[in-house]
Image (cartoon, rainbow, N blue to C red):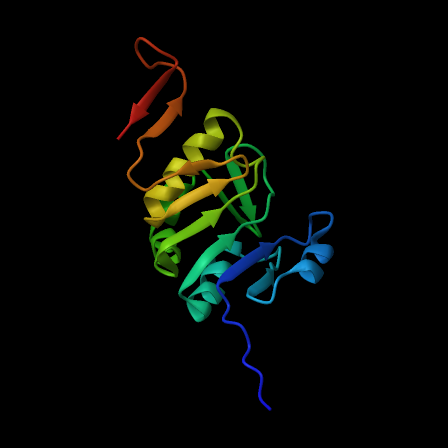
Length: 160
């Protein structure tokens, strides 16, 4: 008798430079594909290659590696300064998710105003929701919060 394998609906991306990554591989659910990045290569491209093969996915989980407002994927760094150069790849990655699909990032990546800004920029580039622990969520149409010097009237403004 042939058993049906569960459909892969989730991609969990791990960075081998993080403690505990091997336990996450063991703990993965049957509907989850686990990808351990090659830390010497562009991790965004690695994720996109596998996500395109598995599409459509409901969830892509990125590793919690990099700190507030910054995600490190192999040699690729996603932050407010570098995101503009990655928009085409991120848009492609968004198309690998179902229309209601979500990119999930770690809580430390979403910390503070720089983390909220990164989440909003990712959501806009992907065309999909971005979530972080604690029910933090950014949607594609949300304004992007900018916390920086030189903005009149307030240290915080919204960019559209």
